[in-house]
Amino acid sequence: MDSVLMNKDGSNEKVKFKKNSKFKSTLKTIKKDWQLYSLLVLPIAYYIIFRYVPMYGNIIAFRRFVPGGPVYGTEWVGLRYFDMFIHDPSFWQVFRNTIILSVEYLIISFPFPIIFALLLNEIKSTWFKRFTQTVSYLPYFISTVVVADMIMQILDPSSGVINMILKHYTGHTINFLAEPQWFRTIYIVSGIWQGMGWGAILYLAALTNINPELYEAAIIDGASRWQQTIYVTIPGIMPTIMILLILNIGGLLAVGFEKILLLYNPLTYSTADVISTYLYRMGLVSNNFSYAAAIGMFEAIIGLTLVYTANYLSRKFTESSLW
Image 1 (cartoon, rainbow, N blue to C red):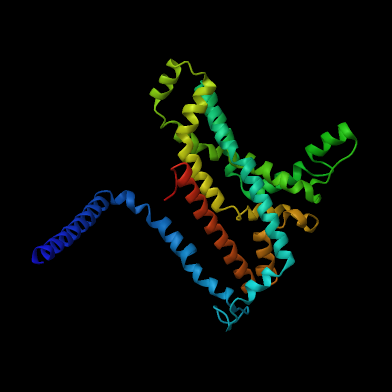
Image 2: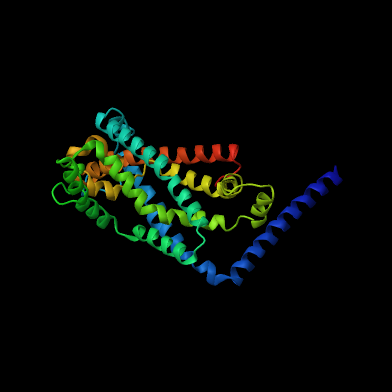
């Protein structure tokens, strides 16, 4: 018995020693490269102040909040506001619009940066490749307000370029921004144009990490350029693809609030009104903050569930995951 106890005590001390040694090694590394680690201070402070601290405000989803009253509400109402939106037909309409718009945008837009990165990787001319990259990156840095104004000008029924072409060939014009069936197309196409070049950056970085010897071996085996892409390039960047897909699925319900708010109108509510714009109207316009907080919490829970599900499926079938 004594020997067993001694062995247990000895093993515990050994584990503690390893933990202390690891902790000291981490401190030593941080002290050595403190300039690099100091760059994390502002991002960490940002997330703490603007992401984690405001989470406490979700309590008003369970309390009656009156503007001008106590910050965390006047009385406890339990799940009343959750019951309200569950039985609210307007909410389920915007929820359906959000799912349809998000899924369509993900399916259509997600492959474009991958394809664009693969095409850029095939360009032999260095100056043309750099020029193409620069031109494709620029739209990402344009303000959403400017992008929305550009869309309005291009699609203007009387002076827009698109309608001038339509009028020349068909004799009539279309008020695209007043037609509900056109809104999703406008949103998706403008999103691809704005984000394709920037989204390709990570894939281009992943392409540089592929071992050149794999291509040499494929060439020796007689593989064509297309076969090299299918059997070497795509598997090489698959971990990056899966991680970005998981992150995109996690933000599935968080469609672009600013662009939709700037482009939609009551005529297009049937397809353009999504959860974020509905929250804006319920919370800031109608001053129903508790109801808006309940819907926001519901959206966050679904997003978290999607992230965990996508991560689990990715780890199970592709062995690539966030954790």
